[in-house]
Image (cartoon, rainbow, N blue to C red; front, side):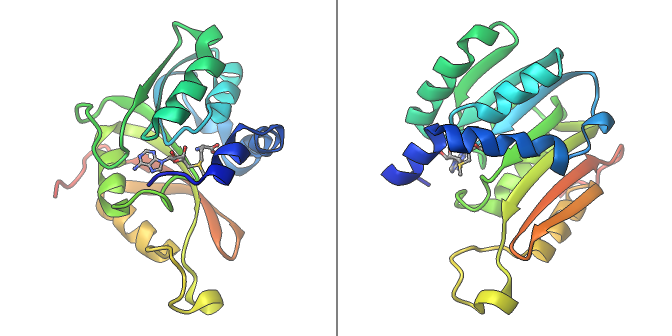
Length: 194
Ligand SMILES: C[S@@+](CC[C@H](N)C(=O)[O-])C[C@H]1O[C@@H](n2cnc3c(N)ncnc32)[C@H](O)[C@@H]1O
């Protein structure tokens, strides 16, 4: 889904960059591999990637977004990290990568934009290696708060059920508030296909 102008500006802002400092608080960084091939989906301007490149000196990142303006922005921000990083225009629901490619897949505040979130979830699981980890955070629909008016298509439960069917086992689930959660999940060694 295309971003609105105001959202584009926010994603470039210093304030947004500062909110990324929460990542080590919502995910268990000590559980992550020291050396890894990492895919970030819907990376926006590249703030998460920058933080991860600093924190994990042996990670190589493939940073992606569907929006060409965001890809340009991330390219500019991350140029100094070449060759550990590569930036590409990719739709999270149609990943052009083989099965079992990445040790870590990162998706922060992307699924509420992705048109087909089920397909994107299956794709993220497909490209993760067995034993690899998904770092996911987003908002979701909560009927107690907004009944059926929410524009969001998935509930936290729906997301977790699909993740389980894709062989993604939660290592850590944090409810950030009633409408947002952070999931750190590991892909089973043997995954049921389908
Ligand atoms: C709210 S921003 C979050 C950006 C970044 N993940 C962050 O935490 O700063 C959502 C991002 O998802 C991207 N996006 C939307 N639909 C997408 C899709 N189908 N595939 C990949 N990226 C998508 C948008 O272009 C935007 O950069």
